[in-house]
Amino acid sequence: MLTIGTIVMGAADVRRAAAFWGAALDYVPREGAVDARWTVLVPARGPGPGLALGLSTSPVQERPRVHLDLYAVDAAEQQAEVARLVTLGARPVDWDAYPADPDFVVLADPEGNRFCVIDTSHG
Image (cartoon, rainbow, N blue to C red; front, side):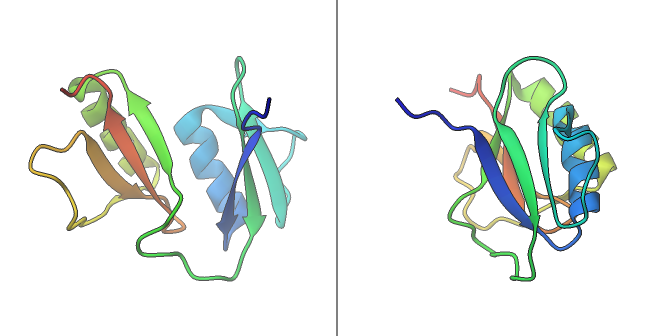
């Protein structure tokens, strides 16, 4: 049986991306240091998939086919996490595809990679 081991994202500045995602997810570099071309972040505590960041010169997709969904337990935690992520360098995305009563907020990391913060208690 296969399991997800590592999620891979491109970054124009691997160190900046590693700093953002490390702080956002409480992840640390697997090898103890961040390389400018490639690094893998892993959970600081406990199990979980790795997040690999590789140097990339390709442009960020405006509507990515694959993205991260980060889960919050309720609307209050979602709002607090969105605010925390913005202080770390994320920015809100003007998303024209929100449903009438969304359970998600679309953000972009400092590299422009889009991700969602999900309120998992939403009906």
